[in-house]
Amino acid sequence: MNHQNCPVCRSQDTFVFLKRDRIPIVQNVIFPDRGSAVSVPRGDLHLSCCRSCGFIFNRAFDKKQTIYGNAYDNRQHFSEYFTDYMKEISECLIHKKGVIHSRIVEVGCGDGTFLRLLLSDEQNGNTGIGFDPSYRGPESDCGGRARFVVDYYDQRYAGHGADVVISRHVIEHIIDPMDFLMNIRSSLDKQGDATIFLETPDVRWILENNTFWDFCYEHCSYFSPGSLSAALRIAGFEPVELIATFRGQYMLSVAKPTGDGFGAQVWSEPDEVPELAEEYARHEQDFVQKSRSLLRNASRTSTVSLWGAGAKGVMYANMIDPDAEFISSIVDVNPDKQGGFIPGSGHMVISPDQLAQNGLIIIMNENYIEEIKMRISSTGKAIRLCSVHDIGRQSS
Image 1 (cartoon, rainbow, N blue to C red):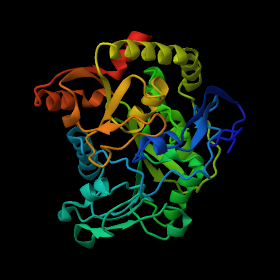
Image 2 (image 1 turned 135 degrees about the vertical axis):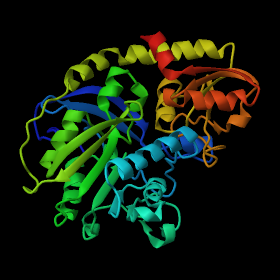
Image 3 (image 1 turned 120 degrees about the vertical axis):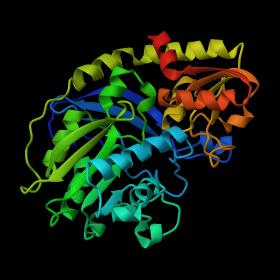
């Protein structure tokens, strides 16, 4: 699909600020051998920014490409830090936002962990149904209070009544975000007091921190607070609150259906995103080249590994070391990824126990530093840890 108009506000005032051709179309699929990993289907990333609302989208995204299915694995609950974060969000919804005695629909439930957290205490009175094409697990759980459907959520399921709709880290994967939001709005037509909780990365954080590894093919829609607010209003919701989550990397929007339905024309501030995008684009290649040089030099005296075989680690490896020349491996705590190979560059995924006695590890997300330090110190290995942001700061 090659959008010219902004998919959110329909403005024609859009501009391409970033082009990457022939990058892997998947980041969260692990392959059994390096040959199949290297020959993964590829696509183009041509990021456009809307000057009117600040929405960023991949105008070269092809939604006919199959990305999600049983092989897709974005589970993060193997990390104690991430598990604590999900518990914190679920407890916020239950205790602060009143998600009790509610019929919950989770759109894009992954492995169902978050829905189960909301339903774990029977006294809260919640029931729920989760939709996800990559879901693997029992059809029902929590004593029958949780049900799961291995499918995308769309108009076919609009008849499911809901007091609460939750969608975490889904909308950034959808090239037609307004269709997605309007489908949810239609499903809530008769629930005037329903609430939607929508969590997604904040593109301002990506641009301000120069995290070039956060732009990938799977993520075709990038929101700022302003563009997310505009999208919700156009789709027939009234934003109530915006909560910064995951130490500012993500944002959680709380919204309610309006009585006007959808299709309203909404004026929105673009959050300075167009200026941030232009500034970022001027320097990205310098960041990539200098980071590559730093790690290549480090590899001459030490083994270099990345910690995290998710979207960040996969994209970083493909941009910094596309031919797997000097990054020796990718470390991940997900046992189902260990022994496999990441798409594109074909680096092998290993467990923390397989690390050499010494070396350098680049941590792909600073939020996990303390957890990783504890894990490494318990092994007695003389391994140096470095945040990928520290590498970026040296490159800027």
